[in-house]
Length: 285
Image (cartoon, rainbow, N blue to C red):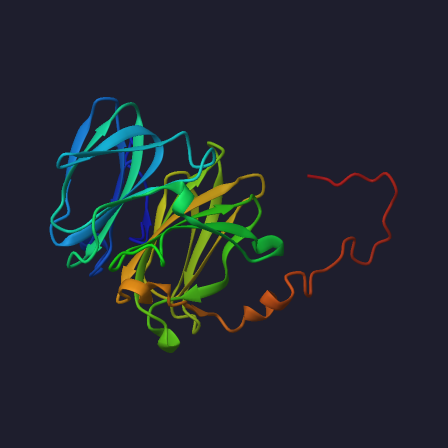
């Protein structure tokens, strides 16, 4: 199996995408699947850390402070985030079955401990036509962090995310950012597809992704789509060379596809093609 695709362990939804597995310098990502009463410690020594609730309820204990992180589900309500500066020790205590995502990156400690509520999160609708999606900026400027960038993306069934394809690996002056795509679907059998590729064709990989899978973006352009009838939620963690407000720097878009932003229906064929429509003829599955 390619190291760009990570799947949850047998019997649990947890997974780990570590720098040791990816060869990255900055981003570390994991998903914890905790049972009621379970407690886990995390130490943010030398790294800033962000925690996002996926489902269930629990608390994060940081010194004398306690922060509740709960969510009925990613399709039921928007998310928030708990930001921990380096040098912080935290205990995660599950009240019931609790799924949380944790990402971290090297940091010096310029920003304090902070709970980001859903009301503070900027919501953006991007794209159009078959590439319309919603992006919630869980930890992106103006919300402060040193290296970490976090988004959650809602993709309707049959739609594309990240279109036009984009890259952030230094190509054409783009910033260098390491990124994970963590997927959830609103159907137990839901699925979609993710592609990483280079413009010259020397690197091209595509994956069928299921609920709980994670894909890394090691280099090149990338784009994702959800199968019809399968609504998709993506949690993106990024970290790299961009610091502080510079984290708002945009990626580089594949110039072969940027034309569509002027008219998302441009060039789309009308059905039926070359055959007169027959009254009362239903569409076949």
